[in-house]
Image (cartoon, rainbow, N blue to C red; front, side, top):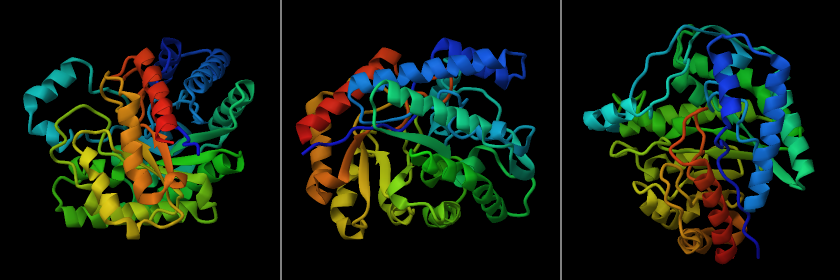
Length: 373
């Protein structure tokens, strides 16, 4: 028996990559050919390091993206200005900690425009380059399986807020229609498509702090409905979905419980479900899956976050194995994959974990998977 190892997607970018991304972000002049060459070289190195660490299903590290959600503004029209910023509810409860994060650079500043017009694709040129870079690197380093991240309609609506469509539902529907080609293009390229959906949990204590948990679950269900519309016709076995409560070190005392969003998560038309189990606020929630195992569709595969992405502790591989075994006992080894809680480079130029420690965490993830098997 073999347990596969993967991760959530983003990895720490080199300074050369960061410099190019922020030059573009600030609207500064840059050499586009040099930009493309830098991205190609960086993706090759990132795939090489993943293969070296033993990762079975690799990504491009989201190298060319300024962030996992706001990259959309560079590839789709209809965005301008700036969206309101709203700190997570738990950080508001601890203002001295929030101030410390801000002063330390722990709250990145980058463009979050609003939707001010009809959302339309500018073409799949940048995506095509990303796919080409990843597939070339996989071939060069003898990696058979790869995935590419894409923002879900719900997470786009969280960070790039609506100031054009008459309702949130109309905005979600427009985003679902606009993103459909991106999703299909990734799948047709022979890669796994990963939809990043922190909106199904994180947005509870960001954008929807004024709602009750029950009211928020209805909002989350509408996000899943929009996502499933965008995925219509695509094979579920090629789709991964990631849910999280926010990739930051903090109290997380306002996080909604997994038990409350569990049915919504299971409704997504995707085979692979990625979620946190290392986060100390949610590490106990493996029991939700144990107690509600009958509600997990047989086709679902659980991709477990068994290494944390907000601290520089390198988990012992035996701890990783223990975390995996809990879920093996629930759904069987054939339906468990080892993963990370979140990405290591959610925003370009920002990351709590030292780059070399991040690679050590991925190596211990694979060793833990080997032990669990």
